[in-house]
Every structure is written in C-alpha cells, then in structure tokens.
Image 1 (cartoon, one colour):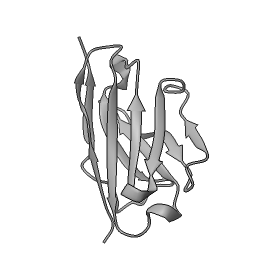
Image 2 (cartoon, rainbow, N blue to C red; image 1 turned 60 degrees about the vertical axis):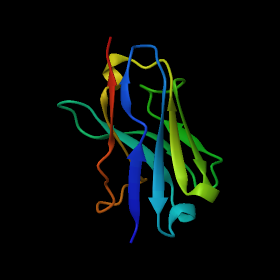
Image 3 (cartoon, rainbow, N blue to C red; image 1 turned 45 degrees about the horizontal axis):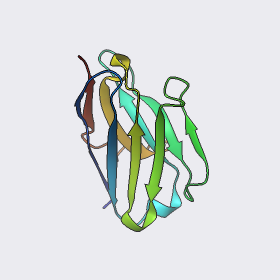
Amino acid sequence: QVRLVESGGGLVQPGGSLRLSCALSGSIFGFYVMGWYRQGPGKQRELVASITTSGGRTNYADSVKGRFTISKDNAKNTVYLQMMSLKPEDTAVYYCNLNPPGPNLWGQGTQVTVSS
C-alpha cells in the first residue's frame, strides 16, 4: 500500500524559510512525477511545484518561482520542498502527491503559517 507522509511545517515570520519533506512508502517512487500542492484558507488546492522521476526537470507555479525549490532523494524515497522568502500568502496546508495526483494518496499534509 502506497502512503505519503508530509512533515516540516510550522510557524515562520515573513521572509523566513522552511523545508518540507514527503516520505513515500511503496514501490512507485521512481516511476511517477511528484508534486507539492497547497491549500490556503478558503482557496482551492493548487500545484506549486513538480519534479520528474529522474529529478532532472522541475516546474513551479508563478507565485513561488524563484523562492521554492523542489528536490528528491530516490534512495530515501523522499521529496523535499525548500521554501525561502516566505510570504503571508504562502500560508496553507502543504501536501505531496503524484502529478497528476492520485485521488487516494492525499495525506494529512503539513501546516505552514507565515505570520509576524
């Protein structure tokens, strides 16, 4: 059974940084594009970053481009999201999933709150 577990969220001041981790159990890690998604208060869930199976190609939403970096460690079955220069509008629950997402793979996510 495939399971995704996000961690690393927290409360950070504007301009601060956080690194999120997504540990994937199961045997599919190396075969699919992975993505980080977020859902802010009163907003729809959106894709913020994705990375190919080899890690050689990444894509970002315009709102995070230049501030967020997605990476993966195939040996650890883990995907990371390094977030820098955080803004209050980055406040959201962050999830990882395949891209496109597997409907049964959504985890609980990790809360990121950017506030002074």
